Image (tube, rainbow over all chains, first blue to last red):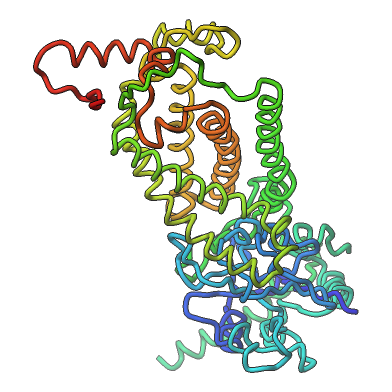
Length: 198
Length: 336
């Protein structure tokens, strides 16, 4: 089985935010929720870099560990998913997530956050694949259709890569060798305890 | 005009042709061997500067500007590694301690000379209401709080994930909303009992005498003995710390950032289990541990002889109040 990951090549990201928009559109994500976002570091300086970030689908995911109702599970493709039926909206997963991936439909005073929502790696949830119930709760299930996440698929500069870990790491390595530089696979050390060796 | 434009266009073309020779700015691998991204930020260097990486974001959600906070893994390590052990140690430790006390020393029984048949009002209706409102809230807050740590380990395997999730959802609401009557109860407790709980010299003598647990006679005490004063201050200090940390958790990110939320959650949990352990001792001594102790908070009336033995200074004070003149006593002796 594949080990699905995201890799954002920050030397290519132009902060167009199309990945964010594509994700919102594909999954009909509720207003206020951003499953994916683009963060710009050192904005306005010559060293500025933008990184597109969503759930990294961590190895030994911290969100799953701290969940008081154990609503998370990992698929055979190593995608971290959760059940909105079991989620109680306590907010622990947001405290534990190193990447700020879990989102809540409401601000959350008095624990009124609502059911947590996050990137599903375009692979739905515990409901039957491609069912209406799955779409309403979790959005499209592109993986079940044999497609990769839309954010990476439509990235105009191919900064954002999605797919099997070995394959996207290989693509990135080839790029870095050809152009002579690369700022590395952002978040990989934190998420997977490993990075792309070049 | 037209000539000027042509000259400028020619100059531009010449400049573009010469540019690659003079300044290879856009070459992929410059002949100088310089890395064009040498100035750019990278993850490793950013983590050396600061424990988390944050930038600018174009959405209104300010906390989304934090790109990476590996402290989430540390908080997870505490919450799933240390916290269940701290909780189990504090609560089971107290239960074992109380059990050991009960089975070795037994109940503190009423003595022959502590029964007169005459009653004295110890806690009035408002005091008992305050106590039981706070106590009811505390018990529910304690159980629903422990559910966050131990529910998935102990309860979920028994009743299944769906039933457990439904219970935990209601537990969460109970925990969030019963916090307010609990806080009001704390304020009432301070209003009615603070004056009688200021530590004084009598308490020191009482503590040195071991509170009468190990001797035949009871050391002198005012309305509250030193042990009760300790319970009072544990409730007030513990309760206020729980309230303040709890309010910060109820309004997430209103006053704290992500690391602040993690820290305050840890503080709330640790003080919570210690508070529960302390209250187990209070519940024990107020019910099973001491014969007749429950009446004070149950009916509000205790036997005068018992009161004279355990709270001699208070009884003297009360009797002096009723004996000396026409003023209305604040805590009158009930009619016999």
